[in-house]
Length: 361
Length: 275
Ligand SMILES: Nc1ncnc2c1ncn2[C@@H]1O[C@H](COP(=O)(O)OP(=O)(O)O)[C@@H](O)[C@H]1O
Ligand SMILES: [Mg+2]
Image (cartoon, rainbow over all chains, first blue to last red; front, top):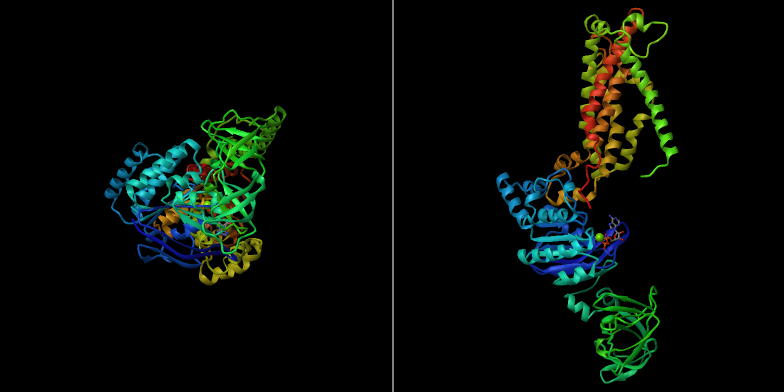
């Protein structure tokens, strides 16, 4: 258990700056998830914490100790790689015991420790096997075991589940959540899968192009995103964005004309009333915020061009494949067919407003 | 994989051609070495031996210096191979892993060793060895063999090292292993096929090296097989049986080393490490 503090970290590869000022605190025992699109710098940031990449500027400290230039092995950190990175020529037991051996632990003690850890991960029967004799899920557990056995202060995971099939991914996700509960260790977890992020995290860090866009609990990011990027990234299917003209103000709400939804006067409360009214704004509304109750005051009629039935819910698309498509979640009307016009209504309090730069209004 | 019948036939024919091309001389040498002299020089050559005798081998080992040459050659080739590996592995790892000034330039420069035909460096090398007292001594041959095998060995091993997934090495770093421990405990086992190939390459070049062995060694008792054996043949009128027996014996260590370390050629060593 340890507190991890990053202060204004920068990382340059040659001339390109990949991490452009990252500051964040992971409390002791916290599960922090880095999410963001591919190439945004998640792995790089994680590898800087591990010490596998040198930091260009800024500091990393663990429990108050500055480890920015400390050797990876001396930081009290263990890392689980996306590709598992097991030693192929060593048995499971040797894989797990290698770090302990390097730390100078006596053989008997080491073996006992490996046995205990293997038992918690259901690997006891596989201790003598080589990695190639294991299934993907077992390999992943060995990689996790190799990390746990050293009692690190901080665990780092780099997309540990992305090589597993969907079913196993869910299972391992739950195992990792349980592991975190049992160990109460500080964990930093990289993923581009927002379901993993939402389900595992105490705190999500959303990254884009080397910058932290927002830090917050999963529900905060979902219900109160700071900007259009976070709003679009968290939530599945993604939030709908439509352009709107600002007509004026009515009390603490902005009155919007939203032609795409056929709503001439939609009053939406901004996060904070801007000093000067903008002329236009982007309205954000989540697919799940459409209600099939078509008798509300703000009625919307959407053409159903394609529909996906998932069983419990269905997704209606107005222009499938197009970025400008609207997606609405239908809870009941599983009998809607493409080509129909579907009447729904929305609640202004479910709507978000963004300015032309993507900042939340 | 599905191949069409004509392609299969063509492949088999091709394979058969090369087997005959390479195998026939071997068969000729080995089978000839157990024929009685009359059969060897018979007007119509026999594909399969009609007679059997070990007289050529007896003569080779009891009445010639062949055993001495054999031991010398084994010493030279064995030490050259070992020394090449001992030097090439750390050098390749250094070129692969460590950052140091002029690394790229140095890495390409070592291949300059192959820019000159050996005959060109022979005379200066003779002078050099004469100064340090290495003329007519087996270590001189070892030094030459190693010097010529090293650049290629380093190149080869470096590309094998580059084939090891980076994360495995990083995992070892995270586990707290020092660089040399990573090399010894993680990298060397993973590049065993590369080490085996380099070992065989170094052994075979040293085993067959003729030019330097003929010039740097003066006394008969220190000659290696290629040089010493060519002396045996010319010494009397050509004794075909003796020649074939000697050639057969000379093949044995090469085959032995293939069988011994060829086992390192198992592919898929890193299987199960990543993904
Ligand atoms: N060793 C490196 N040298 C140069 N560029 C790199 C290196 N490692 C990563 N990058 C670049 O940094 C950016 C972020 O990479 P990465 O952290 O792997 O992204 P993510 O894990 O979020 O997908 C990418 O544009 C990538 O090309
Ligand atoms: Mg990554």
